[in-house]
Image (cartoon, rainbow, N blue to C red):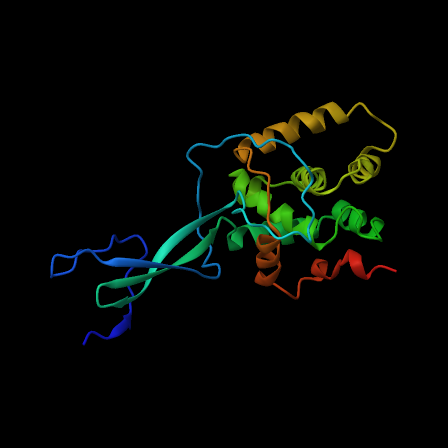
Length: 226
């Protein structure tokens, strides 16, 4: 009688036919996220804006910066059990870029200024890291303006009103509106560099936070503000 054994083969290897000539039967099992690895969408398509996605809603769709792959978990006779792993594009270097920018004095002042976390709570800041991972820039290319562009985009995706985005402009430029067209031009270039992949799931945000759970910005929980 055949015994069931875990399979250590790589997920990229195709299942081989059995010696008896009968095809293996695949049993699908959806599991938890796997390790991070880079991924590029070969055919990026702009997403329609649609309704703002609330953070307390479950994300049934795969986030734009992740891809599902199937790996062989066990072989049992002619049956093969598969499980689905989610591969994220976020790498340690993207966390390092984010941590470096947190030391920027202007960004520090901005985070201190946003006392109620209306513009920069932990989920919006997680999205900044996700966007860094999708933009395709070298680590040294990420500057202060990219932090604010990514944060502006995160608010644009998640918030229903214009106040948070206007707050970013007010902090950066005050009442001077002459710099806003350049900001929007850079924002468009940034989105295009991401292949228009702007959706970030709550699950991906929590995975990003779990990489360094003691990082001080993850304590910016809007629900705990009096």
